[in-house]
Length: 416
Image (cartoon, rainbow, N blue to C red; front, side, top):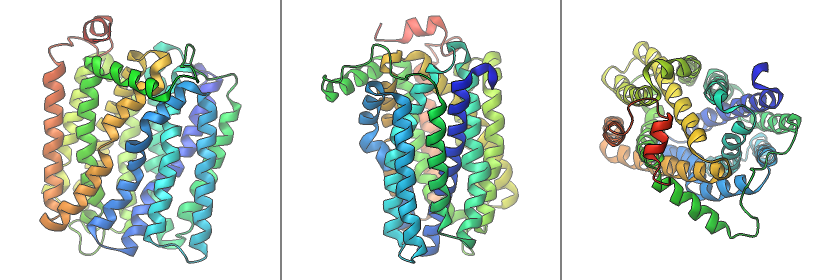
């Protein structure tokens, strides 16, 4: 860690704490919702509320990241999340929490997450040398997985049964600590040659959209990521009903569901740390497409063999290939996008990649109501495989080596 620098160490520490908070909140909220209703449509609204801010605010958050000091944006976003969740904790202690207040809390926390995450991805290249990006992203990804799933998820499963109010109180404290840690980063983190504050924000956004659409690599990856996230959002919005409860196919207790995400996180840590080595051996493009393909096929395993004994090892493999692909695609974006555009183009990419997630989550709940959970799980797998096929066809003839090789950049960037 010391080789990556002092500023990165503070950024990594803050990321670890904020993602631990994410893990408690994102696992605890749907489990609390299950205790309030068994309706697939209502349960899917929790996942939709988590991702809806990306659809509504991603482009504006990216423009802010290119105008403002990115570290300050992250500090403020974390502190706002802390205040929101502290208020919800008080409501829970007073016995006033219901499903609709829970949804509102998740939605408001998600708004702050958009600003925090986009600024975090844009500030990381400002803390480490370009040749250390993949290594740094691997460290950050491992911290995210440990916080989100390895620790946060099982803790959330226990808290739901014992102290439901702490599902919001613990993340509030963690977000506050994450924001304060960022104050240890020395210097300014405003993009050099960034946009003029007097320039209309819509012009900033339009510039980013043009760059993304004209860049064939980024455009292809964004479209595929959009299909994968749309399908996975539908899948996991209702998967809790497939896995948890007496009437479910797998029959897990809430704590067992948290253990599944712990297994996922264990694999994800391994995948994050091995991604750089795998890309060096097989090439970034081949490794990325392989990761996406394997992840998609693994979605069928809990449907074909609905058993804890197959679910847990499958979750480990989900983590290995999912995190490995995530590190590679983030590192590629950070290399391919000019520094002054990084916040905005990242936001445009993530709008395409993540904008369909609330729609997928809502659609998963509606389809499950009328056609059953199995139809959603199998259908989502099919959409993922279509997405992998599209990116394979779109990029395989263009890339013969690593995704970010000099030849690939000059050949595939339509903006050059």
